[in-house]
Length: 145
Image 1 (tube, rainbow, N blue to C red):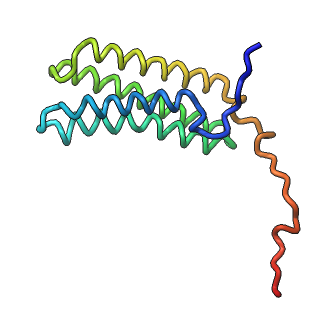
Image 2 (cartoon, rainbow, N blue to C red; image 1 turned 90 degrees about the vertical axis):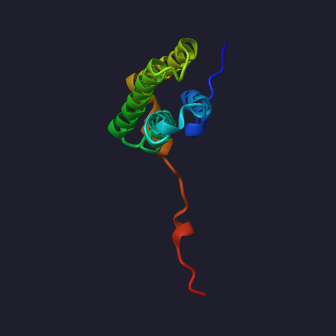
């Protein structure tokens, strides 16, 4: 039987790691874009690709509120789609090979599928019993001595 490990934080999520891998690869590739693209295409593709991971992290922080969690995952999915758009533009402009675009696009689509699965099963990530904290009330007393 396969053992499933529960995520204790956003860094434990496979989708978060995949999003970061794509962002790093895009950063490396975009170093070769022409200098005149630095404040347009280069900036846009880097921002969109990095934002997916950031949105996943934010979603994790909003798990207490399932609708907020899903909303942030939706934002992460939108960012990966925007990244696909910028890959299309980079390829059309001749800055990126079709093969490299297809590899990155395949990875981004996988991230999208993973995010959509998380949204469909959001209740599993947002279970309230994960947030039950047992504390000793005396821990909050102030000692004036």
